Image 1 (cartoon, rainbow, N blue to C red):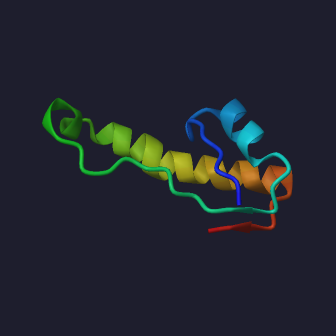
Image 2: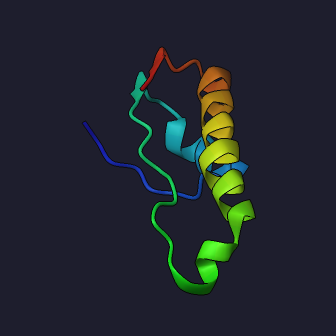
Length: 68
């Protein structure tokens, strides 16, 4: 297993991260923000929902066999 790091909202970073992999364990996400950042519900949507969708799309495009 190899960890790969990147921004799930950046298509180029995702493409590079999934390249040459057979499986992905997707752990990226925003959790438990406090203060002013907690008010930015759009960030949760962008990263947790949009980032997951983008990760799955990049995996499909790269022919990744399994996404968890």
